[in-house]
Length: 489
Image (spheres, rainbow, N blue to C red):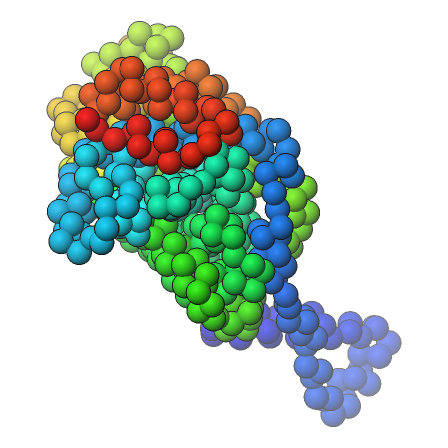
């Protein structure tokens, strides 16, 4: 039976009044009355317009200090990962494939010398920022918020003047938009196979670009509607170059939507909430209060987090535990008999690749992640390279890693035991891994991460200048300075 029919049947059954014991015989003898149609909730109205109104009217001065600060951290982290990923083969291929079709040289490619039109620059920078799977994460939805938004508005800022304050406001509003929309359909939308960074990220890009283009309310409604028509990304792509395509395409699609809307290219006014609109088409869950509730008071953008490890977020607790045990006990691979870890089902669903052969596959292998953390004591970009996944010591150890789905373990937790050949058992339980909302990366840790990613791409003085520009974005008269100083000499 289809899910929708089964739900309708259950709702109808629940709506029927229970008979009392004394009336049961009479009811049984009587002709059955026709079942009453289940009450249908009133259709949602005005969600897209209310969100558009908020985006158009929200100002930089409305942002609380903690939200501004997190916006700055989001920017710094994104620039670092975009520069760091810029020399990956995936980006080389994208540049080569798109160069013959690029328009005017309007915008920079982070970490590179080439310039592209803003659409293609936004796409390539979005790919670059996600290829290491090292970017920011909104843990409630597993959205990587900055990729679609920062890629779009940094490209736009090179085409038209944008002050630092306006840039930061647009960045926060874009992140807020995509995360709230993501909340409204998560996890059902994600569970069926959509890559939510792409499908929700396009709204963030459209909102942020539309804000900087100074769209009016009706135009913003249309921009969101055109964004709704461009969901991109399937989870089947994970472990391949295609995964990073998704935030890149969401960035360029958002620009596309906002630019068309700025010229009064129309759309439905209810593209998010309508019966055949975005939310009802791509998800069995629609919670519109997640989109509109406490707008301007509760900020999802304040909950953004930054990865200390360059891989799928559900592996971070296990990596954290493995590194701690390795360092505390000075472990070497030849001491280890096997490793047992109790995990949430999502860990094996997302990262169950037992024998990765390429670095991108290793980012979705809990077996590799634990093994490399125990061998090398780290989980950065170098630990998820082709070299690392084919290292004989790491390959041998990952065959001794035994993840077990365990009731009661949450996705953000792990219970890990390293059993040594001498019989000792080393145990570590992680409630919240480093990089979570509860144990956030410090500003200093973000700078170390940035420096490590940019090393060898930009000279040390340039790295310092870019980081300083990000930290001080609110004081910049031209946000495009960040992009211009982030290119390779």
